[in-house]
Length: 452
Image 1 (cartoon, rainbow, N blue to C red):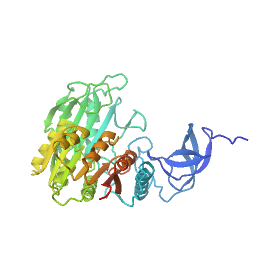
Image 2 (cartoon, rainbow, N blue to C red):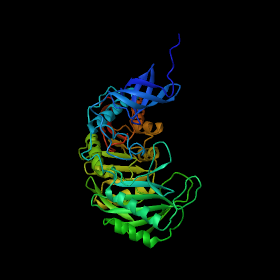
Image 3 (tube, helix red, strand yellow):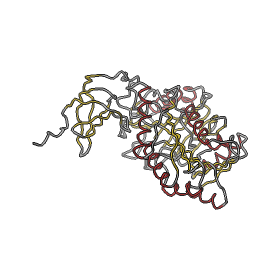
Image 4 (cartoon, one colour):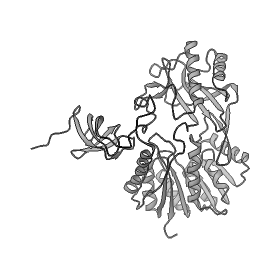
């Protein structure tokens, strides 16, 4: 007799075993994986199935039969609607364990590495840590964040991940729009004006606000400047960004300063950085220093090594390593970021760092042709990880150590397996929580050449 198949809309008693990569609880029913929204590891729950797929099921918690001590009441009124946070219903200790387990699982299951990730470096301040806010704007006006897996904007008055300055400036823009009937951008109709409110802050309490618009200007500019300056005493500049594209791209093609300056200065790992609106910069400076400190530790620098830093951005890791290495070469494909890296090195008095504009693979090949033989190669790629040819080129350069800073455990695991096939073995990895309350986790890992 064929067993009864799980049915959508029906409720089942399930034990939550762990967490998925997007923060859902994971359970099993008749041999199938069930992704349970709001599930907490160890709990016995009544779960109503919301979708039945071929190989997996999805559901929501209806009733908790055996609660977990790790479950807490979310402290954000928008948590059930906003897609920004995934872990406000569990303790921070439980969140850290979920992230540590995920990194270890990806390295062992996808990377084939015989390794235990025994350490995750948590944040001393798991809230109010972001130094950059990007608030989408929708008709209403609604200014906040996208609901999970949608393009519906949830109107969020105050986000607990963002600085209070960002929330005040967001509120001031909404006040200005309502008072002067300034239209929000309509994504479907491709009409309207205001698309995003963008705020950068630094450790000194200063902020820079940029309004991204579907046009070359806005009405009532002087009133906008007045309301923003009145809302935030630490404001040092107001910028207008032009974005008339019909895409999901946030930043503009050109910028115009409405008041004050068009940049913000900040200090990270002892180096000074000048940040324009489009500059890439880590959003959690405290934990970035922890992450980069771990990367430098893994590099085992003695002051004489040649280091190649691929995906160097504006030079953050390069400048940290330059203080402990003989020579550092940084490579980045974005021209503006390379210019920023050069200026940041100059401002910080770093003379043993050079930067070139090229993608990672071409930069490595070019330096190899010029006779550069790095002792250490550091990579900090985007979420998609390293291209296969980049892995091959790194192996051909034969560094003693590869320090891999990863923002996606799955692609890190894949790349660890590729490196292993070329003679590089993973010997240590540490998880770092750069983005508390979200599903994201960073890893600092070291691969060493066989025989060393």
